[in-house]
Length: 119
Figure 1: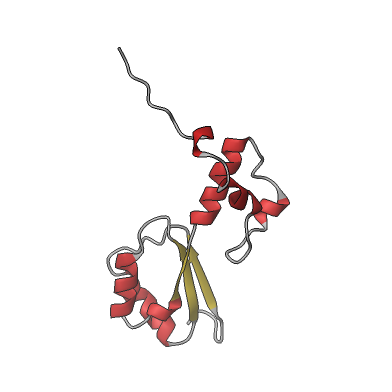
Figure 2: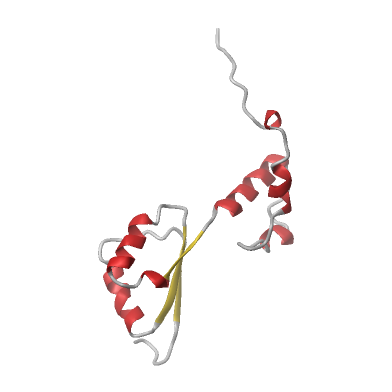
């Protein structure tokens, strides 16, 4: 351990773990130093979950779903709204996004690309 009694919380943006990363992480889990590792699902975590399961440390991997955050950002950009609003920055996994809720009622004809034939 680096500091006796320290607890480590790790965060990775994309959660891409190279070859033997899990083997290097496992000892920190087993000696109770590493509390959890949080990663986003911006890339598939299927292989990562499998590696963590094989090492017996799957419960320490927390995968954060980014779909609502990205969808909210996309719809706000489409509507010309700012992403730099306190209400948008405070949205979390359990908080309903009012803009996304309203977006479900917008007719698709207002935002769908219409194919045009080229002559």
